[in-house]
Length: 280
Ligand SMILES: [Zn+2]
Image (cartoon, rainbow, N blue to C red):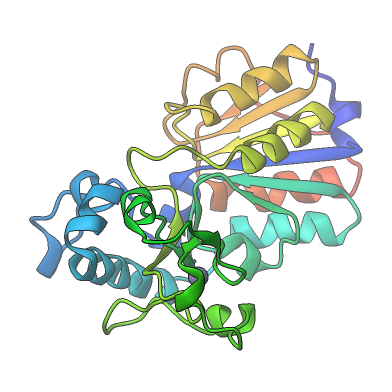
């Protein structure tokens, strides 16, 4: 069942990455508590729409702290090896659960961010406030949220929004409609963006090889992606120091880290060589 020839020259590859990929760059897991000032704050209580509605400044400050550790991190050898595979002409789609931009910073061009991106902002859409508006709200042309047409600044555009960063200070507002801005990530209790999920499924439907890296495969739709690839006959490899239930069923499993495994493995794939794996 393991087909090294197919692996050696795959037409399309999906690299699916989870928290383990970023951990090797020193990025904390989103679900883990921080140290220091925020040590007593439970991420599952502060990274929610309800918390932001009640205490926007506190929620903003928590994310600023997280952003600082992400800005200080650097792509590791695994991130760089993935970007290199794409540069060598293989069609690569990175599907990631991480929100830290490390794949893009390493040079990957085609990244599907299942849980969004911490360093990008969007408007906080407050349905209650929209209902309470005196006039029927319009869609803000800059942030895409609900806006009172009388309140909008006609001269503001998307570049004004793009220039605002997740930094220390008061919670910023949309330069057009005045809505509060928030990180463009999926908070606890929120749905994933259907377009992003569709892009991930499309890539999985099209791939000949899927490599799951450092992903615990506990939450949907992430948990189903490798299984879908297996189901349609693609080759599937898992790289995880703590192998998941997938290890038993996929074509090769490496109980190791991304940094230890990806550079060598992806170099073999890109150079069209037969791969020797623990199960081959
Ligand atoms: Zn707006």
